[in-house]
Length: 327
Image (cartoon, rainbow, N blue to C red; front, side, top):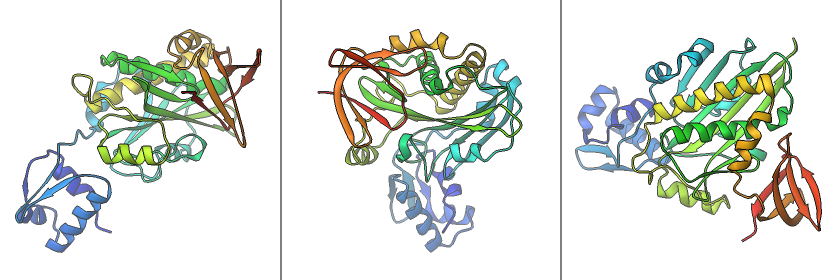
């Protein structure tokens, strides 16, 4: 397979590039250049070619690791263990889950322009063309398991709302247990995974996927797979710079993890309830082979869903449960 990453960076500006010059600069024979272009097309990138030039249909806003680290708040930088950025990786969450022990109170992050095996909740795939969104995983070590650790994905949702609102993005809501909505459509998702350390303590990885500029083909693929109608940030009067947005997301996750370690989920519950997209709405709950309908009544202090059915309240934890509004 031809390495498509150098070509991606050369074409990222969206300007026409002479084929002969590209081949020379990348040390590729003409046939190898064509193969690399095909590899980019396989990623879902639109490429316009003439007899002598190649260009992307629109510039790509690639994340800069150096600018990202410098954009972090001083308090976040002081606690940073390691920040990694990949052009392509199988899964940012999987990469951090394999990492060595982390000192409690410090954090690391992994970002990728493209994930070949990105994962969502319940083993679902999370995929998007390169640079069309944010693929960020954040790792934090707790000295000991905090209260209501099962609610950490909900606290992360609050952190994401804070980061997005700091960039002037409106119409946001949260859907239990791990979706971020914009104007009722899915803008992003959260996948939290934990590892108990042999020496004691908890190692946490929070994966975040956010749609920033989603191509039409990717939208169609999401719909075909039965996912929620997707949203992105294109219609917000100027798409946020992806590097700046990533810095805000990481700053808010650092602040969230530190507060969660000290106080658990309690400080986040009111804000989550205020953003609850399904509170007091008719919903359908699917739990393995069972489906039932009722009314969502918000969440409790541990992040469990309060589900009313037949005049009785049930308490549902995330597990294998899925939740949809009843039209």
